[in-house]
Length: 203
Image (cartoon, rainbow, N blue to C red; front, side, top):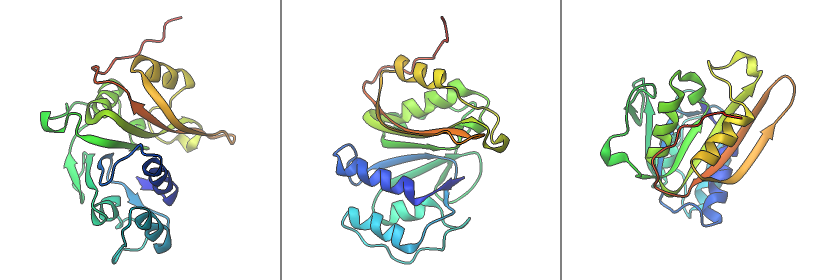
């Protein structure tokens, strides 16, 4: 899994616009790492919150995003099926959100994880349940191409129905349509505490 400074910049913008508190509670999916980025990228992110960064590992497989977030004072938990730093063991196929985590997070990150999960209903219910009312869901959706990445690719219809059924508000969206690859980055606001609604594609 990989996170880049571009995603940090978007998170800083959310705070700048008053959409994300500081320190925020962040739930992440997958043991995310910074595979790219220089120290100045992370220092810039820290300065946005009036913080400075100490020693950080170089970008690569040992630089887990939780290292930066927790150093700056964010509450951070990663949900994954493997043992890794900052990880709570969790299977998106079968596990349900524990009561103490329901609605507990200001920001839920899905940076290229759900396309590896067979049980899409449970995966998106978990995302919904972790996020508080008024909180944000920041996702990456593989749609076409992408070198056969993942076991599930998403359609525009999937996103449209997911947003409508659960009354999410689109805060920001960026589409990448360079053939043969197509993907979408999107930030959604959870506008109510309604239970997660499954989607049905009916004409």
